[in-house]
Length: 137
Image (cartoon, rainbow, N blue to C red; front, side, top):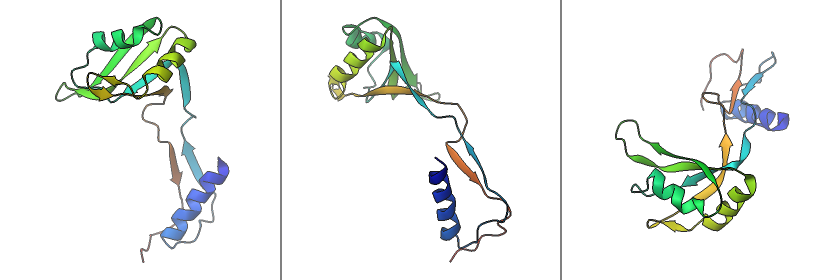
């Protein structure tokens, strides 16, 4: 990870033609995202898919404990993705393998294990101090 961050900082310095700062760089990183073993991300949902139809599509693979469809705040229309949570990991894996690429109400689904992320935290943001003004060439 440190090599990747150092490479990023060096690339920025070279791109903007500035010398590296004399002080040490501080990097702010979010904690690593971990895949949830029983929560699936379901992308490619048709606008006509509702909670009931999504649950029915996945319940043949095991006990579905929760279904969430993400809606746009302004229009109230589905954003085309959601989440399906199973009671156990084996059922989720089976559903992922079977349903990824399959059509639901005319649209192919994209299914992955959901990643838990920290809200509002940047992935990697280098903080470069004492650079001065940046000259672009």
